Each structure stands twice: as structure tokens, then as C-alpha cells.
Length: 310
Image (tube, rainbow, N blue to C red; front, side):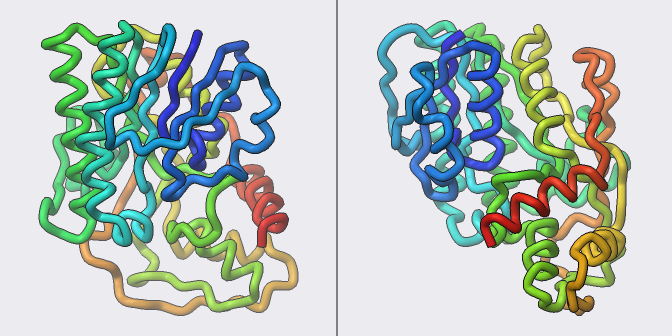
């Protein structure tokens, strides 16, 4: 295969580039480096089957030669990033998805959209199934990301139904692992960054809100299987083991030996989801996929990476 991966210099995108190369495929990594980093892909640069194109996918793109798969992972993905870049986030979810779909259509390639559990908003159904339509505040501060992804799903299905493009949609739940940015604003790198520096760990609200954390290698395995499948509707990929934010803070404090961090509480941000847990029945039955990395091992491996970049 020759795969085009937008957002390929980002956290998840760089792991996808690595996986496709490991499978013997060619990879064209497209990224404008708004939130991605060349550091994430520098170890791939010497591979003759890898090429990097610095380009904003919200602008039209031309790619020479055959393309077998287009994976659209370009977008700010943490609250800190999309709150800092709301208009680029909306553009990459709309114009960027349109351009990536246009490339897939022109090349008769498979297309895979990176969607998100934020599709479900602050959910009223638990755990979240793919047939749940969500509870989203379209004009709230998180709407720039949530609605961009909802539009991206809609246009992806329109290209599938009207143009016959072979599309796949993955709804990604909280993912963690090496190559996350320490300052990306998400709860897990925030806690690890603060614990490593011996600073107070900031919990928003009472810490009773829940999250479900999936290690990045498990996510990439699910995405790869989904791309090769024949299923066009959305599929949740995430780890269904649910924990509270307070429990995560305790685990990280225990993991970082010698830290002097304590816990402090701040007001809960607007529209912050109270519970987040995927129903992964579809992934299990359609893809034969289950997460395999337990949280203790995943946290240890992530901490080792963060120590190298602190």
C-alpha cells in the first residue's frame, strides 16, 4: 500500500506512520506542524518508503502517483490546542476533511477518518455506543472541535453514499503514550508533568468525572484493522476500563517516586464530560480487537518517555 496520513507528525499520526512502515507500506506524511512536531518522525526520515510534506490540508493538496489509503488525522486534539486555535480546528474538520476525501476519491483509495468520543459530548448514555447521537453544546467553547468532527463524519458518509468512496470512521477515546506533548492540556500529561516537577496536581471539579485510557499501540492496532475491514459506519476504539480523575492522580503520584506533589482543586470547565467509557462491542465482533496493554504498564512506559523530554 501507499498511504497518505494527514497529521502524521502528531502524537497518534506518528505512531500510524511507524506502523504502516513496519507493515512494508509506503507513507506520505502530511502535516503543517501546528501541533505536530518533526521530532515525532525524525527516526523515520531515513526510511526510503517514508516522505514528509509540510502542508495545511485545509488547503487543496496534490499528490503524484497512486494512493491506496488516505487516513485523515490532522486536527488539534486537546482542549488547550483547539481552544487556542478554534478557527483552524473548524477548518481542518470541514475543509481539511473535504480535501482529504477529494484526494481519496480521485485516487480511488480507501479513506479513514479520525473522529472522536467528543462526538458524544457530555453523554446521557453510558457506556457510549455508536448509535448514540450525543449531547453536544454546539456554541460552547468545545464546540469548535466537537462540531468540526460531527461535520467530518457527515461529509465522510456523504462521500461514501454519493460517490461510493470506501470510507471508515474511528471514534477515538482517551489515548495516551509516548510522543504526547507534556503541555498539551490533557489530563494524563498534565498530571505526569506536574508530578515530575513536584508541583500540585490540578484536578478540575471534585475529580469524580471518569475517563477510560487506551494505550496508543492498542489504538493503532484497532485503526489498522478497521482500515482493512469492509465496515463503513463509525466504530469506537478505546479501553473500557473506567476510572475517576482522582484515581488517576493517585496512581501517577504513586508511580513518580519521590514526588512532593499534592492535589489541588479548581472549577470544572464548561461542558467538561462527566463520564467517558466506550462500548467496544463493534470493535470486538467486527475487528476481533481488544486492548491488551494494562494501565500500570502503559503509565510506566509513558512516564519513561516524559522523563526524556522534560
